[in-house]
Length: 89
Image 1 (cartoon, rainbow, N blue to C red):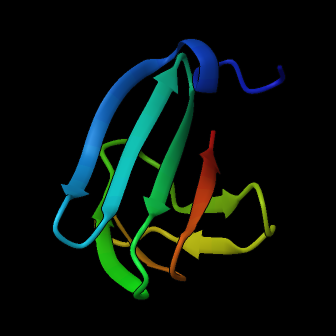
Image 2 (spheres, rainbow, N blue to C red; image 1 turned 60 degrees about the vertical axis):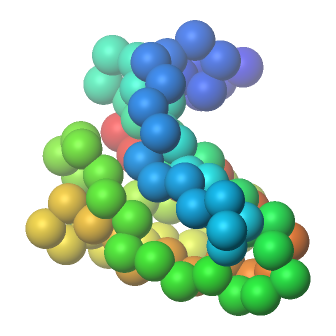
């Protein structure tokens, strides 16, 4: 309930790769943004994920890990059959 953008924010697909089983999208509302990414394949998936909002660090809501944003991208690696929610403000 505390992250309104996850329920009502604008929805934008950042990248989708059906062949490799990966989907990432963003939700943005007011000054808060979140990225949700899924790897449904049986292989590890690594990508330079493009983001359109201004932030220098995003935080994984599930693990607490922080990712640095460089030139509007995040280097993201997801284990097989896993997902993440990255929070920005």
